[in-house]
Length: 479
Image (cartoon, rainbow, N blue to C red; front, side, top):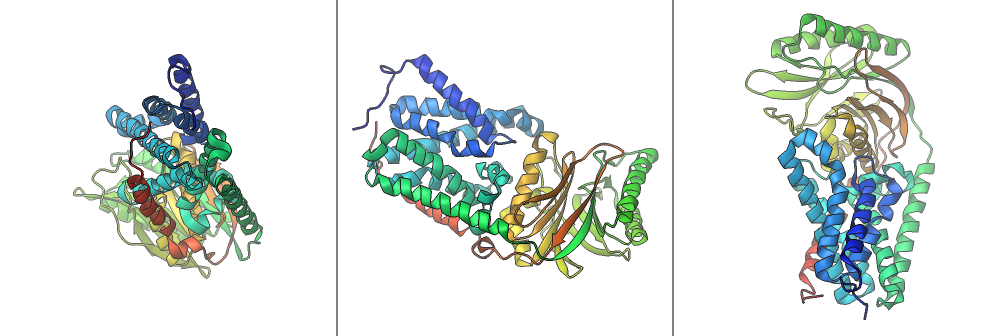
């Protein structure tokens, strides 16, 4: 029988210190700039504490560690939501973390069998899958996105989506905790440990093999321009002119360097319908004079409602496609969400249009894959520079899942070009006037077929069903 540590064996100060230490380490996993390899290790000591402590101490120790960890994002939430909602979101996230750990603890201590190593990852994937469809923000905060910096592992997203990535990155610490706490005392222990090693090795092998495939296609020159300054409804004519002069200059320069497609950010300005008509003519003229495809984001306010729209102009100056943002950000009150996709053929390949937060949702990304988009053009605007990197990496993952390249141009963020394997081809930070410009060469090929584009979130929903079973069994009180 495994001994359980209680306050008689481990004094309260040491318990608190252990909890705080694990919480501090967690901040490198759940923050906006996670360290990918720490995601594989840091949850293990938290689980070990939960397995070894009596239930009453395990609860508060785990919750305290989780609260310290997730509070790393409190300042960002404060900027976006205000103090009350920021505090609520932080507390709820810590509570959810504690619930998952404690339910995993219940099953491990109740059965002490090899299969219980799956409890922790299955519960997390189930929650993540439900969050993706139930929350306005989807599953944007999932630990799975930490693996964007580990390209071989990231390729698992092309098989099972974010759910597959999350399962893998939570299975390892679950196995480590089981091994360090119980060793060979778990029934069928070798199945748990060998199984995890096999899954991990197979995932790495698949990722390495996928990354070795050569890029075959047409090299296309892309121009990206971002000016952090925006045009409001009450902007002065002189201010408006200064921004458009800068955009015009960048577009002409990129065109002279060979750019064939140029993308501007989300909401270059908020305008009335009359001004929007003037901007449309101006942008069409720019596209025609420079012989480029030109995409630009604009907000249009007719007094009754607002839309967040992306225009795509052909080299002839005509409006080839328009797209309205579907997933609105917390600050977009009064905006009307769109409901249609936009795909445009350019040089023999399909290019899809989306705006910023739209690409946080795998379902929308997969819908563009179903339409054989080879490249996604994504104007964006980050709320703050704090989340600039994280939001760009979320978007990049959609390309890996559904097999296409992504061109994302953000105000107060990064201009990024990534391929269908998530490799960053080019990247540059945005800036205020006169702004930043980037010329990138991307090999554009037909969309890469992926298993995920065919089965969608099937793996995630299997975990939802499995978690319902796990939560219902073994309810006998466990100390």
